[in-house]
Length: 219
Image (cartoon, rainbow, N blue to C red; front, side):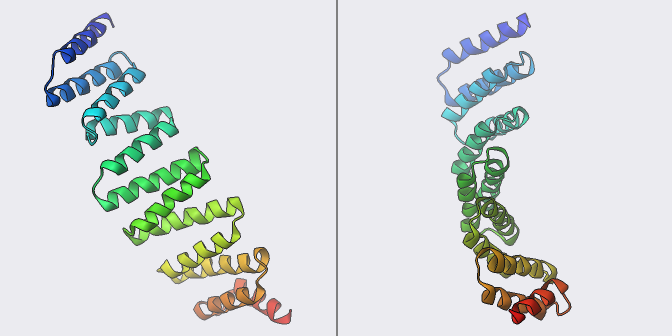
């Protein structure tokens, strides 16, 4: 360990006498690797990679290393900060959407910061990059709004999923859920009946729709 401590000290000394930007970046990346791989100094390595980003905000090696480190350490707030930074330096819209989707998952599942998770998923939707990413984001919004008991928002999100469904089975499932929210949680049985009739239009023998329709017509 003593040899590697000396190596770190040498690398830090070299940095003091180096003014060239690219060389500073190279030395700091090398220093961070020494700190992590040989001294197991994860904090020191994280600080050194952060210094790289101060000079080169889009440095992929530093960003990848910090991301991996915070995943391993389960430091979700720090990971969220790194991903947020990546969205600022990533020009590709689809790549940004994937980052926002990951941030939504972290905020929802790990940080339990539901308002911030909603913002992240809504950003994915607003970026309009593709059906798969959009559907995932809306499905997560349904989960969050259910947890918050925001039933009008649940209904709205389910209707959006209905419009995006590319399989009859998925469309039926979202319609059934929408009808249940309308009838049991929003007190709108007439609207629920209309939605259930749409289910029967897609799947005439679906018992989940036929029985409630009969019940609602009787009422």
